[in-house]
Image (cartoon, rainbow, N blue to C red; front, top):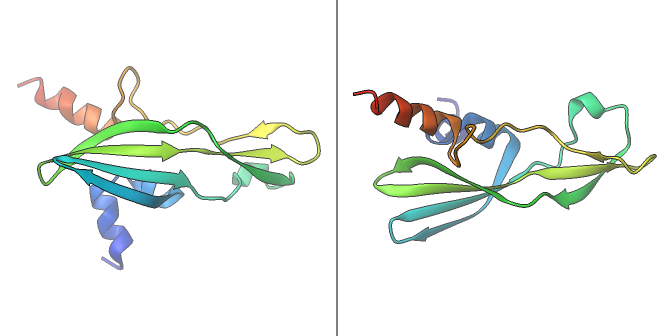
Length: 117
């Protein structure tokens, strides 16, 4: 492995590591809370527009795989931008949560698989 990010991608969903900054963590008993904010990099497909960062959407909480006996909750804040010329709100369409759940896709697939036994 080249650096610690390669290792972290084995523990956390890779899209989180690639596109979000870990801004805070909190361990409360057997529960680990990790807080992420989307990088302030406008979507590449919008590069022809003049975009201004205008904060974040409401935080989304997602349950992920347990780590070392602790439940893990990812608190994710997606960024939004405003087009300077026409005021249109721009955001990425992140598909963070498995449909019908509040957990990451990987964790939902894991639980679905083990429930077959």
